[in-house]
Image 1 (cartoon, rainbow over the protein chains, first blue to last red):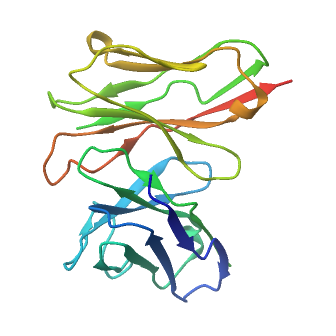
Image 2 (image 1 turned 30 degrees about the vertical axis):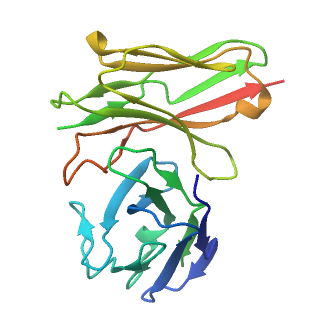
Length: 114
Length: 117
């Protein structure tokens, strides 16, 4: 499976600031996704990162809060904007080679907001 | 709506015991896919298995086995002769048919398995 590198692996941020998380894959992939895992909780899909077009957001997530870029088939970024303590979570990038194919996940970014 | 329920929040066993993690799903789709993932304490998510709705054959991979029963909408996971390294949170997940929602994974709440020596 593809090797997925996610940066940073963790960060502690101040309230009101923004952080951009990067996801780099060692091969071209069809699908890229961003998930959030709140403390002790399951994973929730934030959005599907579409190459060359705007991301597709799930209910409850908006572009102003979580802008996403995907300039090519191997790279995507997720920005968490105007952070508050409620944004403290693990953010995970996943990739897949087609709809309903197994998604493989990066190691995640552990984000804490003070 | 799609939903995945993992009834066991936590399970604790002693090494070498067999353990089954239950997963029940809800969907109106006739074509769908089921997955199991493992999340060890280090935090990464490891893919274990994918099964489509037309394939009800049970699968065995080493000490791991999966029992898919459409009649009861269940996709249970059994670990035989558990080991300490099996300690992790295990997630069951569901995705729908091809289409603009086809890539979306719906996760259960996870079952935290603790295997004690």
